[in-house]
Every structure is written in C-alpha cells, then in structure tokens.
Length: 419
Image (cartoon, rainbow, N blue to C red; front, side, top):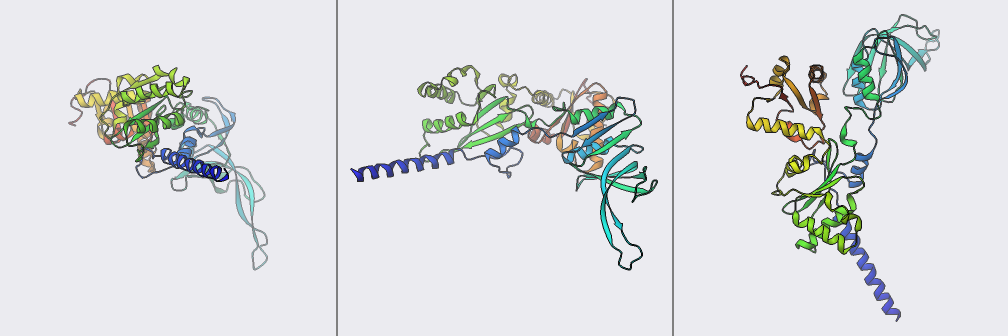
C-alpha cells in the first residue's frame, strides 16, 4: 500500500511538472511591433502599458495670460527639458539651487577649496539645449548678491530632470501658458497615448502561430505569441492553447471587444465557454467580432482598418490614416506626403489634417525638431488638425513608408507634385 501511495505521488508530481512546462511554453512573451529585435517579458510590457503617464510637475502657479507671474516647475523626463527650452526666453528670470567651488584661504600657497550650495537668480541672456545629456544650460546675470556670488556677475544654471526651479516672466504669453498647462495636466490632450488602457483585443491566426494584440487609444502591442507544440499541433488542441492564453491575458472588464481572424475559433470559444461553464464569456458573445484575414504580415493594420472594427477603436488616428491612404491610392489630389510637398500645401493653407511620426516631431536634431514643431503649430493656427503618431501606433510603420509626414488637404492640389 505504501509503495502504491509513493507511485501515485510520483505520477502526480510528474503531471504537475508537465503542466508547469506547458504553461511556460504557452505564456512565452512576444516582442513589440516597433522593433523585431526588441524582446521584453510579458509582465514588463503590461507594467509599461499601465504605468501612469509621466508629466512635468507644476508645484506652484502664480500667473495668467498677458500678465506678470511666476511658476515653480520640475521636469520629470528628457522631453520635458525640450519644452523648457521653448518656454524660457531671454529676459526671463530663473531661480534654482546650484553649487560653486569656493576658495577658502587665499593667503596660503595651497589654496583650500570647498563646494558650497547656493541659490542663483539669473536674468537669462542665452540658453543652450544639450540633447545628449537632456539638459538646458541658461546663461545670464545674477540679480541678487550673496556671500559667494556678486550681483551683476555672469553665471550659468543647468536645468535637468527632477531639478526644481522658479520661472518669472514679465509677460506670460498665451503660447507659453498653453504649453505649460498641456505638459503639466494630469491627462494632457497631446500626451503619449501608449499608456492608455486597451479598447479591444485582437486574436490573429497566422500559418504557424497565433498572436494576441491589445489595442488602446493610439498604441498597439502584441502581448503574447502562441506557437503549437507537438502535443497541440492538431486544430482543436491548438485552439484550446490559444483559448487559454485569451482567458489569461484579456480582461473583459477593460477591453470592450475582441476581434478574431477566424470564425472557427470564435465558435470554439463559445463551445469551450459552455463546456467549462465560463458564464462571463457566454455573456460577452456579442462583443466578439470576426474579420477574416489571409494570415500574412501586416494583417493587424487591415483588421483595424476594417469598417466592422473602426467604430470599436476609439482612435481617430486610425481613421485619419485610413482616410489618407484611400486618397493616396485613389490619386484624388487631396492628399500629399513628403516634407517639401506638405510644406507647399501649408503655404497655401490647404492642410486639413496633418499626420506626422513622432521620430520627426521629437527629433534629436534641434533644427529638425523646431521645423516640424513649427509646421504643427502653423496647421493648428490655420484651423487644421495635427496628429503625432508614436512609434507604437499601428499606423506608424505605414506612415513612415510615406516619409513620416503627410497631409489630407481641404481642396485638391493636382499640381503639387510639379513645383
């Protein structure tokens, strides 16, 4: 009897080990669409999707449009420093803590020196943005005398992430107020959408594997890739493997719909829900949509562009790119792409909607960045719309193929291609 118990225990332990091995294979994480070489674990990817969007902090606010005022600000990420470069102008007064090396005894041959902390109040004369270190160097005259720095002497302050400072302006122009409000809001209107919760899940079947994608407002990420094993090579066994991944990684309390590329798999899901008595799945049958595909690369873009899915995704950027693409394919004359053509369309105020990749809009080269920021600003001032596509957006690779900048026009410009 004892040997029988031991034998049963060994068999049970073996079954548990096989189950754990199978789960490890099933939950093997995939990679982000933005690079086929960027592999991250599933848990890190979910943390990335759900963490709060970092924004610049406005600790104190005492200003209004077209009035004198001040603000206490803390940059939290490198891109915030670029905003400060555009916000702080010559003539502004910036106060921040810094340190200086002070010689203590000038009578001795061996000059003793010490680094002391102090606060400088600089009236800015020039500023330099350093992209490599993501710092902003402000040059100007010190306004207030202290023990170590005389008033009127020239000094430099360096602003960087997580370093608070005070900014005083004689006149807060509307552009400056708007830029600061957008960047410091809890949910900025032009914030990176990659942190938004997913609107839907997409289950794509390829020839030798399946993928589950999560689609949010402006961001799309593949959360898992399911490959058949020797034991699950048959159709129903592989469907069961994908079904397990779907149940494990898709929260129906968050996503609004599930799009599948296989009608057969949808029927299998319904059948499994009944068999396993997963009532919550049965109650969500109407939220499962089928959009058949051919199983080739790029199917996700086709799925999201399908009329049956467009209304499910609360992402105007998908609709904007779809409209642009249709115009390009139909050669309607109401679409253009490429820096030179878009610029000529802007000159005649013909741009209704501007589409631009994040790589251009936030380019590391200062001149390029200023150029495209000016383009976006000009389009908005002319009553047009401007959409910046992050590298994680499903339409970003296709927009990049159109040089990364394109526009939908208010009226046809057939001669635009022939300056």
